[in-house]
Image (cartoon, rainbow, N blue to C red; front, side, top):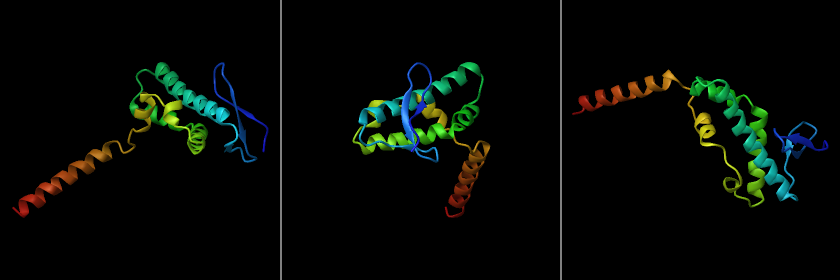
Length: 134
């Protein structure tokens, strides 16, 4: 394993272990460390989106979604860290949670206009079938 690496932005840095491939490694013997790592990653994600929306106040929900999802390494650490602390018996929702804005942003469907067309066609099909058998 590599020595410790730094995660986070701002004044508070947290150290996490990474393997030789650069993947985050859970340390089951240090609950407090793993909890701090999770808090740091959640804060980093929240701050990234907050900074983006302050910098681009007229950005669409899809643009915000695209921006926040391009930080794949951060999301990988978030998911693995969350799994780690939950495996240690810690409720991740009680420790730290993504902001409502982040939750809404990552939930934006990527279908755009396509989903509206599918719903419309399904409704028309239902009406046609209903009238045919009525």
